[in-house]
Length: 374
Image (cartoon, rainbow, N blue to C red; front, side):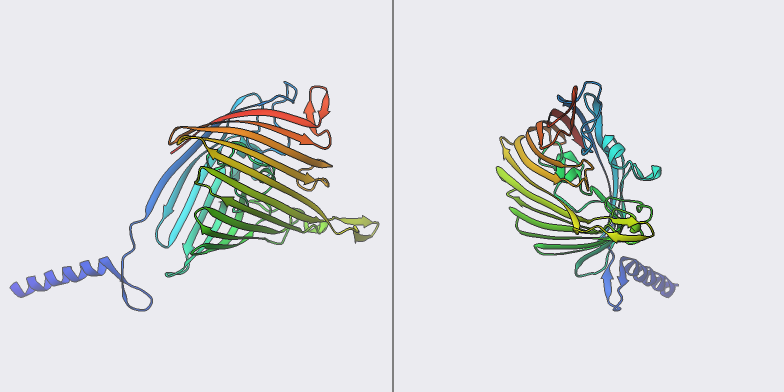
């Protein structure tokens, strides 16, 4: 009886150890992974934009803007709830969104997907290296601004951010080693969850980021693919380059530059076809943003930008060459609540802005927002 009792006790001890440990692929004993972390976060940004140039009956800001789009009415730019799951080797994110950002920027997507801000899953491919494979719908790695205003230096987005991808869908490999991050992604297209009808090939996007210190970030991102049906043979090559200098200091600067090319479309004559001479259309946009910390709770920020898309590749307005100037003030009411106000002026070479009497070369607006995050 005593011998049987000792044998049962030993068996229980061995079983307990076996549960707490597991054998890896080499046969050695490894400690069981830590318990997974499941987190819920959220964000809500309410805003009011007043366009002093547009007619009083116009309820939308200029066509090349997608954030803070509604004019002279209180609206929600972006609100989302996000669930994130993470272990040492597995991660996943799901965020559902509402607001005018989703209304305008996802207008071309399928109805069921318009309210998806993020939906992706990933696995770490190496035990010793920071190498991840993720697939799904992501916030774009292209650019230094996102749709989440609280994470950006200015209340409204730059023209280059508004007219480059805010989100991408596909699969990506991300490798981080020390000061370097390298990313390669196969996507469904230029800010597309569903492919453009008639476009069969995947697009490629990359990112190379170098952070020599916590005061400097250098980044180059690219896109190679198309946003047109295959029949037009309009390949696109796009580059986003930026430097963020002293982001946590009292005074910081962001220098950004976008440049892209689209091959000119095929021109058909009867039963024959030829590619229009001249190669490609080019658009580009430089921007400078400066920020000054006035106190522990407040910032002043300013921006100077330019966008040249004379061939209407991205913005769709022929002859579009526009300067932009903005000045803003931010005040953190609480750590989770941010109030912002910003004045902005656009100055175009041609009359592209709607006015009460037709179209003019300038546009002036004032935007305020209150953002709460948890």
